[in-house]
Image 1: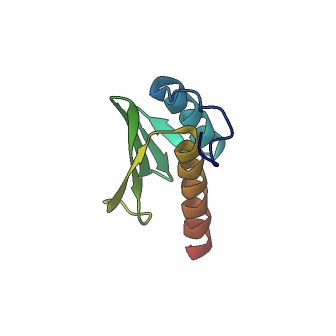
Image 2: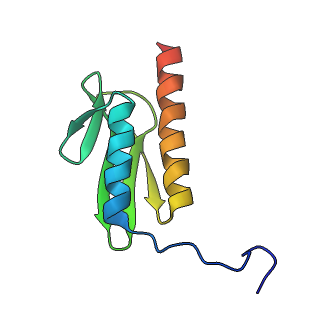
Length: 98
């Protein structure tokens, strides 16, 4: 047993359940759901897709009609929380820029 694991293993990551939680969080952030994508003021900002045992996500770098995308793989609950926090930060930045 190593010093950092505290004697337990984290529960297995279930991407189908995690994507439902992420979708709920994105709707709470006032993003409009369009299939597997989410929009802000008619501009696509997030796309989600289950890819095996992970979630393949794309997040717009800037709020634009044709955005450049950052690709993010979500493979754990910690990465899931980090992803949602990242989207919140981008939304706040875009709101401040306008």
